Amino acid sequence: MSVRKLKEQVAGHENVLRQLVNEVQSLKDFCIGTLEVVKLLPDYENALQKLKDDYEKDKPPKLELEDEK
Picture 1 (cartoon, rainbow, N blue to C red):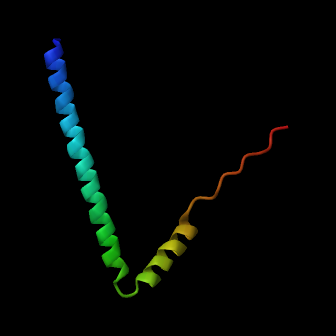
Picture 2: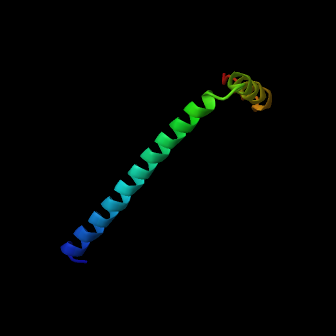
C-alpha cells in the first residue's frame, strides 16, 4: 500500500471519528435538554422517588466474599 493511499485512509477515518464525536455531543445536549424539561413536569419528584424505591427493591443482593485464611 502506498503512503498516499494510507494518508487518504487515515484522513477518511479522522473525518468519520469527527462526525461521531459531533453526533455524541449533539445527543448529550439533547438528553440534557430533555431531562430539564422532564424536571418541570408535575409529579416529577414523586416519579423520581418511585424509581428509586423500585430500584432498591429489585436490585440484586450484594455479593460478599469469604475471608481467605
